[in-house]
Amino acid sequence: MIACLYSGGKDSTMALHKAAEAGDPAELLITMVPENDYSYMFHKPNVRFTEMQAEAMGIRHVFASTPGEKEEELGDLEAALKRQGVTKLITGATASEYQKSRIAAICSRLSITMISPLWKIEPLSELEELASKYDAIITRVAAEGFGTDMLGERIDEDMIARLVRLNERYGTHLLFEGGEAESFVLDAPMFSKRIVVDEAERRISGSVGDYAITKAHLAPK
Image (cartoon, rainbow, N blue to C red):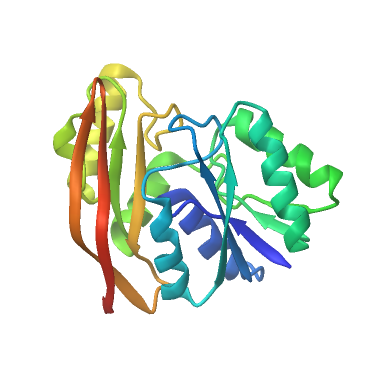
């Protein structure tokens, strides 16, 4: 069973595309749902809509819950992989040694082959591919310089230029590996339909801003 650890964001979506191109198409999407808003391992904003993304790609999908507590959440992931009989796991890891090393350790224990097509990818290369082939929006901002006006905005050439300026001024990571932001994919090459956001709320709490999708539907491309 080839599975993808899927958050609905830019990295996991692009990773499953690249894995499919390399001959490892995902048969299952596993979305971890943390109760904790600030999980060390798993993305939370808008994860319930990963079910809609899975439908758009025609891939089976399951949710697995976790309290989201540091280190303990790894056991919840391991249990989910065991339940599903996973033999290969696609991840969207790009630069975080913390995340990759822990998932790799689980895969080693379970004799699962870990596939990380984006590992150490050149950030601008990924962003430019996103801008040209995907419709990915920013759904959380949580770093100095990342304004709430970015919420719900598409990662396009203008946004890339802005991210480059933020990187130069504040040292933020272009792919948000420091937790600067989160994203959600509305359309991608493997989607047979696109996701249309009908209703969303901008929620601001201190230095963190969220773009919470409350209603969406699939539409023809």
